[in-house]
Amino acid sequence: MEIEDGLREAHAACTLGLEEALAAELSDLGYADVKAGRGGVAFRASKRGLVEACLWLRTATRVMELLGRGPADSREGFLRLAAALPWDRWMRVDQTIAVDATIRDSRVSHSGFAALVLKDAICDRFRMLTGRRPSVDTDAPDLPLKLLVVRDEATIWRDWSGESLHKRGWRPVQVKSPLNEAIAAGLLRLSGWDRASVLVDPMCGSGTFLIEAAMWAAEMAPGLQRAFAFEKWPDVDPAMVRRARASAAARAKSSIPARLFGADRHPGAIALARKGAEAAGVGHMITWAETAVDAFDPPEPPSMVVTNPPWGERLGEADDLIVSWMDLSRWVRKFPGAGVCVLSGDPGLTRHLGLRADRKWPVMTGPIECRWLRYRIDARPPRGGDFEETP
Ligand SMILES: C[S@@+](CC[C@H](N)C(=O)[O-])C[C@H]1O[C@@H](n2cnc3c(N)ncnc32)[C@H](O)[C@@H]1O
Image (cartoon, rainbow, N blue to C red; front, side, top):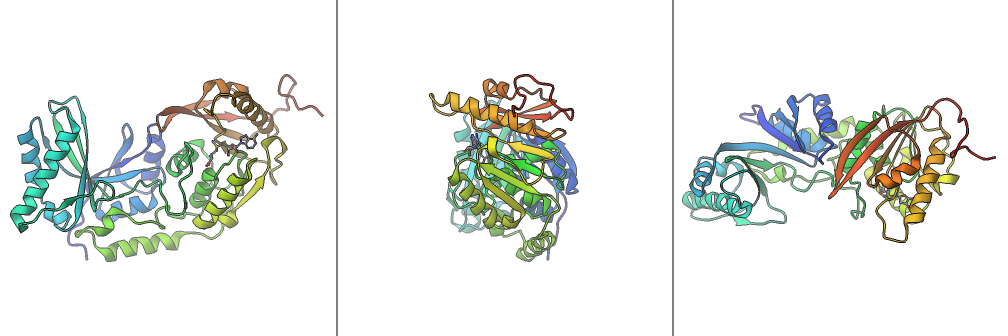
């Protein structure tokens, strides 16, 4: 039984550029005081709401709860702030912590130093109470903490997620691709896809877009197959977590109205996509084809195309990349009226699409600023020119 479960200040983090998508998700889920910032969205939630945020958010990478806030322009300031917080409510002494600090425009400018002071203050508090100190585990701490200092004002957060939320638990090996699950989910939302019409990715690689799309359309909670940091915390009721998991599981549908088609010319990619879709429980909702885009004939014309064509490959492969983008350009023009969204990290390649975007979203994928570009294929028949199909 929860004794006290009022609303807390919370923050969901996401990839830069996806704040709008994440804010829409939080609003749809009914959270209070949703406010998009840079790299994340502020909101308010009860403990049950924070558990559900971890289970349900698709675009977020972390869900954090504010534990304390105060001035911190010196070592003493950090110590005072940390000493005022009831750490023994949030962890047991035999559990582990890690502090990740970020500092901007502040007198204490060394983040490692600030993190160390906070960690020492927490350990001192436990030594005073129990005679023992908790240990540090930077890889998989029981209580992951985030210290943020901006203009000498510190906030301390606990991270309810643990491992990044893009790790849904169904992908056996994380593949090398700029597109992780949370980014794919955010981009899908920005695309405006209605979750009911035909969605196609003609260069689907390991199938991230389509797997995320199927899970979204089927109302499958992305976090159901994984564990979270909060599951080890003394103040989070395991019965409440079981209820939240059970009601999330009960909402999942076994079939969806949308038809989803994916293709890739690389047999290994299609094998990986099939495997991933099966593991995610959506294998029966997606049809895959092993084919190059120029020969790809989807069973139904797409109403929306989402794709992440190759870019940024090693020198010497540039011509092959250009051919792929030109093939994609010719292919999408076969579907008048379709919406097309393309993730590009190279404007030089985007040019080969020969289309004019009606919306561009800058999105950081790793260290690279990419663009999520949205086009609409003209519903009128082509009038000729470079991209006209030849019989
Ligand atoms: C950047 S990856 C896509 C990653 C993907 N979004 C994922 O979730 O893994 C680009 C993919 O385009 C495929 N590709 C490149 N040129 C192609 C072509 N002409 N026809 C079909 N697939 C192509 C590659 O095999 C590769 O899997």
